[in-house]
Image (cartoon, rainbow, N blue to C red; front, side):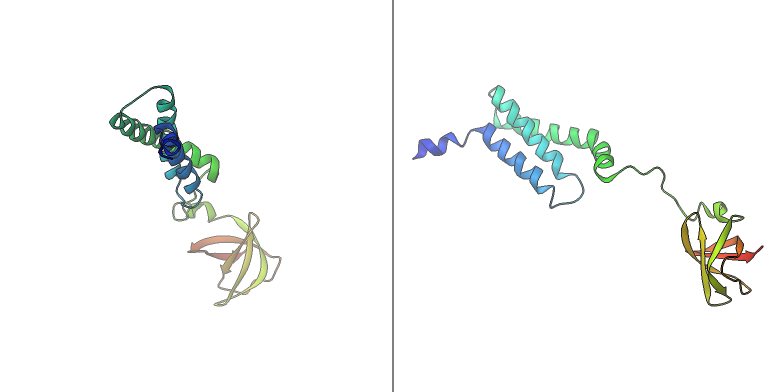
Amino acid sequence: MFDSIKEYLKPELIWFMVGLTLLILEFAMPGLIVFFFGVGACVVAIVCLVTQVSINMQLIIFIGASVLSLLLLRKWLKGIFLGHTASKQNLRENLEDFIGQHAVVKERIIPKVGGKVELHGTNWTAQADQEIAEGTIVEIIGKENLTLKVKAL
């Protein structure tokens, strides 16, 4: 009985199972970090399959391969799996980008109540000092949080 169990206690099989478990565990844990420790365990399994190494050397290879792959590949793989962003827009820095642009009123703007305008295909809440009818082209004169300040042309 112990001979059959001994067969499954080979280091390469144990490291492979640990690696496979960590790779599967990545699906349950967000962040794309556990994946690289699974890769490190698989690297140790391959090394153990090819040559005989001590447990200390196995742990050093595991930690080294895991950390090295984490540092070198995480950003690249995160971009692949989560998608690359062309630019991250900081609305505070890009306030000047809004001022002076023209938008179309989608819902009538009533002073102190507001309305909706469309700018570059996106609907925005808008405020104005006077009533502005739907379909009117307006100019953006300011921005407060996600509300555009507009005036009729």
